[in-house]
Image 1 (cartoon, rainbow, N blue to C red):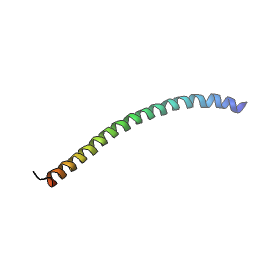
Image 2: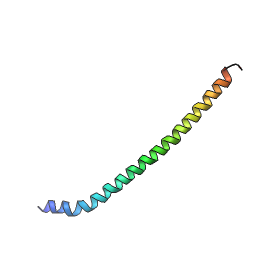
Image 3: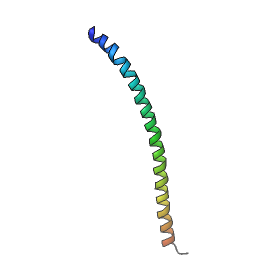
Image 4: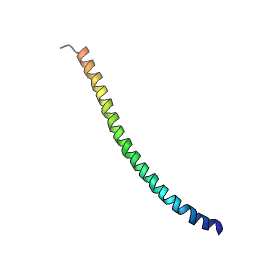
Length: 62
């Protein structure tokens, strides 16, 4: 009974805001990962575009 009281009193006020904070950090991390994925995809596409144009200009006869 004492342990249940301790759990209810001590862990609930500490645990729920930490859960909310973890959820907010998770959502922020998801948005950050989405933006970095978009930037990385843009960079990969630009690198591929550069390699493809280099390949086309070098190997195709004009």
